[in-house]
Length: 209
Image (cartoon, rainbow, N blue to C red):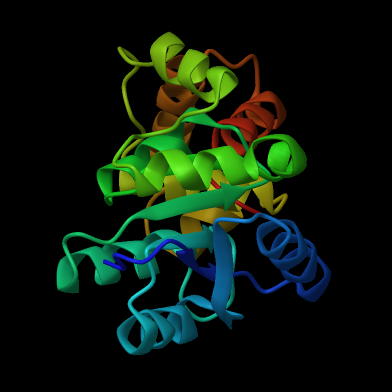
């Protein structure tokens, strides 16, 4: 890590306007600078290897390699990497996935202007930062049963508007099995029906559209 006075920051985001806004905010601070930018997870990994930033800002939803996968690979190679995940979704599942992968901070994009600089400073100092609303979600669902990989497959099919028969055909399982999975999904998510289950799953970060 850099021992100089400036906190050297790498930003990884596939939205040019978002990345420009983040860079302007960081570069306006007296104690930090953006030293490199990347537009997807794969490029982010390469930029990290080249520049060894003090703090990395990593968007979750990106093409080619998503933020959590990139975070996992960087932390595997550089165990001291300090990475803050950026997301538009405050769901507990996505946050838990990020922290299990080694994220040091979690920032919702709608609060960047207010919390970005302070979160970078905190993470650089060795702290972990979780927004209160995300921490609340994590606490509320800490005892919930997680969905299995097959249940997630069924849920993604439902999110695309597929019938039980179509989901069964695409997954090479019986319609009866799909119905059992749907019943389990509704129970685990506390949902009334398939549509409600998809809404809950999107909000919590189980699936993406």
